[in-house]
Amino acid sequence: MVTKRARTWLARGTLITVVAVLGTLGVGTWALSGSIASELLLPSGPDSVVTVVAVDAGSVTVTADARSVLPGVWGLTTDHGAATMGDIVSADATAVRRHLLDRTGVLTVGATGMIERIVYRPDPEAVGVPFSEVILEGPIGEVSAWTTTGTDDTWVVFIHDFDVDGTEALRVVGLLADLDLPVIVPALRTDVAIAEGGSRTSDLGSAGWRDIVPALDLAIASGAQDIVLFGSGTGASLALLAAGDSRYAGHIAALVLDAPLLDPAEVADRHLAQDKVPGFLVGWAKAVATFRFGIDWAGLDHLAVAADQELPVLIFHGEGDDRYPVASSQAYAAVAPEVTLVVVPGAGHGEAWNVDPVGYWEALEAFLTATVVGPAEGAVPEA
Image 1: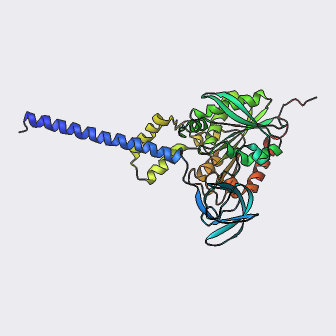
Image 2: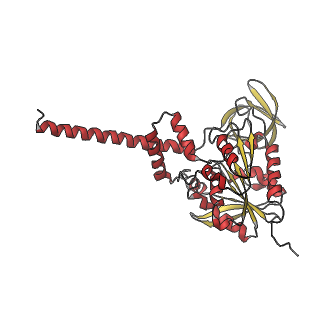
Image 3: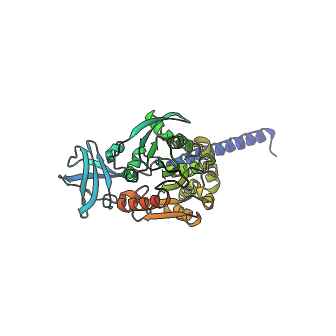
C-alpha cells in the first residue's frame, strides 16, 4: 500500500520532473530559435582569409583557396590597405596572381586579408557616379539615403542584403547611371542599429519592408513614372513585400532580385533537419523566433504566391549559394509568369556579379532595356 506521505513525495517528484523537462525544452527551444537566427539573419560565415604573397604595379598575388581562385572581380581588405582584384593572371596549387584594378592604403607582403564580395567603397563616387545624400523620415525615424540623377522617368530603389550595407549597390550604380536611371539607396533599420552600437537583428522584412516606403514616396514626388525594386538577399524579400503594397501598384514596374530569400521557413526547416532536430521542436523554435524577431513565416513565403506575381522579374542566383540555395529561385521561376533566371556557376551567396560581372551587367541591361528604359507607357512627352 502506498502511504499518503509516499503519494505526496511521488506527486512532488513527478512535478519536479515535469518542470525540469519543460524547462529543458524551453531552454532548448530558445537556443534553437537563436540557431534559426544564425542561419537566416547573420552572415553565412567568415570571408576567405588569405596572405599577400607579392604586390607590384599591376598585380597582387595571394595564397590559393576556394575563393581566391574564382574568376571575376573581388575585394581584398587587410589591416592597412584594400584592393580590387580582377582576372587571374596565373595560378598554381599555392598562390594566385590577379590583376590589381585599384588599391587604397598599403598592401604589405605577408599581411593577411579577407577576400570579399563587396568591392567598391565608400559611396557612389567610388565608381564615378555623382550623388547626393538625403534624409528620409521613415518608420524608425530619420534615415539617410544616397540618390543619383538621370533623365529617365524610371527610378531604381536598391535594397541591400542583411549582412552588408548600401555599398552593395555600387556594383550596379555605374550601369544604371549609363542607362540614365535615377537611383535611391536607402539605409535600413539594420544599418541604424549597427550605427548605434546594436546588432543586426531583423524580421526578414515582415515589418522592415516599410523602411523603403519613404524612398518610394521620394521617387514618385521627384517625377518617377515607373519604379524598379532591386533587392539583394533579404532585401529581395523586402522588395517583394513592397511590390505587393497596393498604394504603389501603378508605379512599380519590375523587380530585380539577387540571391533572394524566397521562403525562410524552408531554409530554417532544412538546417534544423540537418541537425536532427525533432519536428515538434522545429515548430516551437520557429514560434519563438516569431516572438523574438517578429518573423512572419507565412507572410514571407514568396513561393506560395509566385503564380500571382504579374511584374517582370529578373533573378540572379549563384549555383553554389549554400545560404539561400538556387533551388528556391528555380521553383519561383517555374511558377511566376514572367521571370528571367540567371544562374552563375561557381558563385556563392551574393557572388553572381563577382564571378561574372560582364555577364551580370549584360543581363541586367538587356532586362531593363526591354522592360522599363525609356518613357513610361502613357507618359506625356515634354513639349
